[in-house]
Image 1: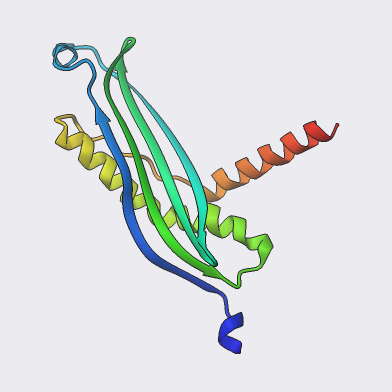
Image 2: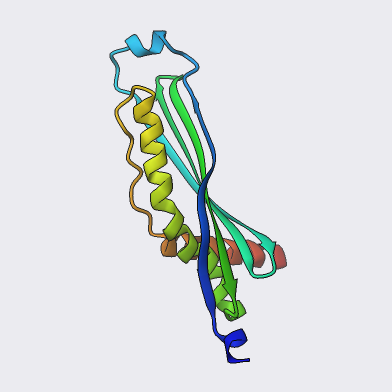
Length: 151
């Protein structure tokens, strides 16, 4: 009986769910001498899979442009399946929004850098992310939106 009440947090699997690379303006754009701009967008999503089992994905979009022309665009989704049981409800958001992405993110960083390098470009290394701060910002934005709706 005691085992059923102990908190459980286990990684079942980490995997690359989706990866795409586009070079829509190649080969002409490769002859450009201008320095490209780099735009990086990150996100986290979580989906319940079964009782106590969650899929948590960290998404990255890396787009480089020279003026208004795309040099390359990488979209990647790195996922993990986690068993999470007997965690107090008020802590579940932080576990899914902070602990899980921190485990998955290093794999995403490596896969994105590898894809870009294999495409013939200098690697773009995604910076370390403070998922705790990101989660707190999302919570504050949701609370602010809820207050605005209530008024």
